Length: 96
Image 1 (cartoon, rainbow, N blue to C red):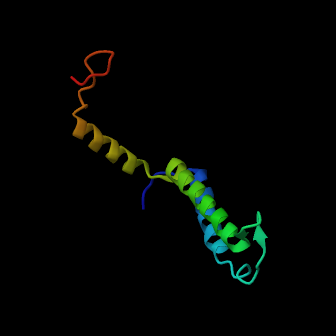
Image 2 (cartoon, rainbow, N blue to C red):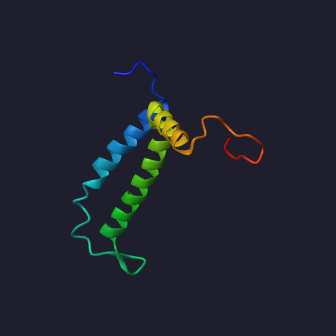
Image 3 (spheres, helix red, strand yellow):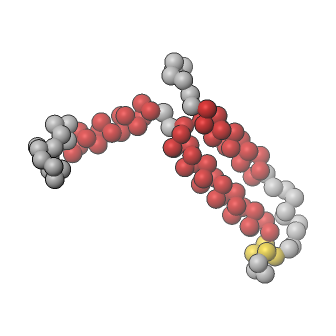
């Protein structure tokens, strides 16, 4: 296990993931024929909200809980592919 300290936000992200797993098990809306906004079954709206919540959770995970060593590796590979390790030769940003 890594000796790097985890951000407190990473625990929030894991909590949100567990909450989404629990909330996704929605046996209570399947027999409900109520239409929301006059056209959408309540079970479909519920799953749409779960999907939006999952998207927000994934954004938070990539922003606050992503391992830094993976981000550093990706940056190093991108720079090597572009050949920008030497920096720029002027203020316009062209590669040396």
